[in-house]
Image 1 (cartoon, rainbow, N blue to C red):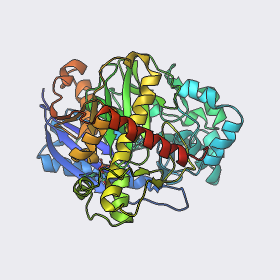
Image 2: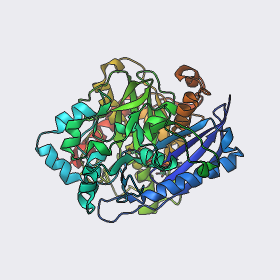
Image 3: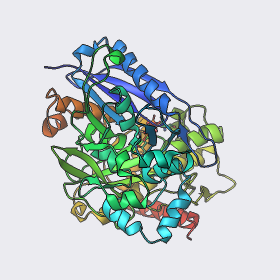
Length: 498
Ligand SMILES: Nc1ncnc2c1ncn2[C@@H]1O[C@H](COP(=O)(O)OP(=O)(O)O)[C@@H](O)[C@H]1O
Ligand SMILES: O=P(O)(O)OC[C@H](O)CO
């Protein structure tokens, strides 16, 4: 059997569906953007129904584009923006409130209060996460507190909680399946990543009733079948993973020590640490990379909020370029003797600093500084931030000591050779760009294909990974040392804690 696999990638700004054939080749796509809602400062919401509508529409588009009948499919793999939270009524299937998106900061105060109560260490020990509005728990609790009658309904078992995967699965299966996978569960602050179960103490702490929680399955598992009217015939959903974890699989980072970094709007680097969870001393996250046959594999994760968003700022905020792909040419014209640094803390700084109040800053400006130096500094900030994450990872995971670091990269920014060269130079390590850049969707497809018995296991699939280009470091040690010291100084001056 070699049936094609349909991957649904429900992301932050658009929903995409991709069809892969039995040789992992992309044969059809569908994509739709949807509205972002910013009802208050720091609030980011999605209309929950938009996520369902665009999922169904793009799956149909992708099948048409590929010329594939739904009846030929081996299965569907779902991957999704993580942490984003929906609460819905089990009877009507209607969301009580718009989805609260991962970027939303409305529960910052709740998190600060909980931190002041001294509970962060317990939360981190169980979940591998921090007390930050980024994660789902305080978002779900906020909905229960702010929608009339929600707490009573929740107490009566009438409501369901879900990250976007659960919400989509519920609707694709006609409300018959309320499930998630271990990677998505590990982003909620409610899941004990060691016991692989929802934790009653955490559910109490965040005031989310257990009756609302989905079943947690392996990443490759049977998640039910789609209603026949959606694609013409029922199709089994056989794989689910959060988008950054799906990219780990799509990049075939299956061995401990392997690492991928995705450069889109933000940047998410994940280091596979094997079957033992590695607790971070450097404020990285410990998360489930995937769970297969009941066995979780863990990763250390560093999340940076601004990567490609710095290029968007040069384009839309400063008007220095018209299109993102012009940034490399502009940056190459810079005067290499100028030491300009951009700390792009537009929405605070993520890992390893987690300084929500910090704001962006430029250092080293002179009368000679112009657009080219700013463009260079914006791109180099992505390399410096990646370097900070890797330093933190090496500190946390002693096994990496002495081992060769190779970073596999993907995401929109990796179209730029200059960006990848800068990363290799600052890391002093090779950076590998694969031929297939659709790694997130490919990872979801692999889960479904493996579950269907059509695609091979980890080793077989890893052999299909193909290099497009390896970027080797060319910067001399002295320059690297000086540039990194300049960056560290710039960050130190930007952090609110001093
Ligand atoms: N050639 C390029 N050089 C530098 N940055 C780029 C280039 N092409 C796209 N980008 C940046 O990559 C980002 C888009 O990447 P993508 O993976 O589509 O992001 P997301 O999934 O977060 O929406 C944008 O921020 C854009 O500015
Ligand atoms: O939808 P993306 O690609 O912006 O990814 C969002 C991450 O999953 C948030 O943790």
